[in-house]
Length: 190
Image (cartoon, rainbow, N blue to C red; front, side, top):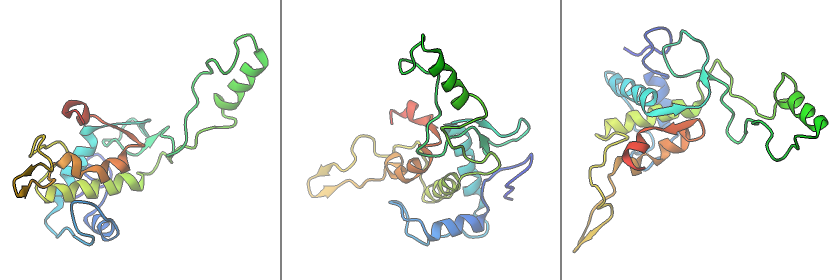
């Protein structure tokens, strides 16, 4: 049973939300409109677990008592950067520029970064969950390498197909890349 909130949360999306996402998503590993059927909730739950365990997300959980990684606070919107301490761009002996920097970026004044709302799960993360679930339904997962380094190798008249899940999951990594880092990639050499 899918639970999208509370202490027993095991998904960011319901089966119907996943199916709605799949109706408008084109990827390299399934046809547009492929759907989950009632009884296939386990794929969504496993995809949720993958998102929880295999990524190191930016920001921090929105509340101390939430059981899932999302929603999160202090996650910059894609394309925005959080300013750091001024380095070489602000001379140490220029007190005016130093104070202006502190007032602008490190107080509640002007923010250079626009943050994702701390009470929502971004659509990209929901889409990634639906795509991971479909990848699992097709018999693959994000860290499997079932053809090793022989991807696309020509053997006489036979060319090995591209079924390496890491390569197939590029659509997933495009959605999650601006929110965090794929930890399993460090282990897999991706």
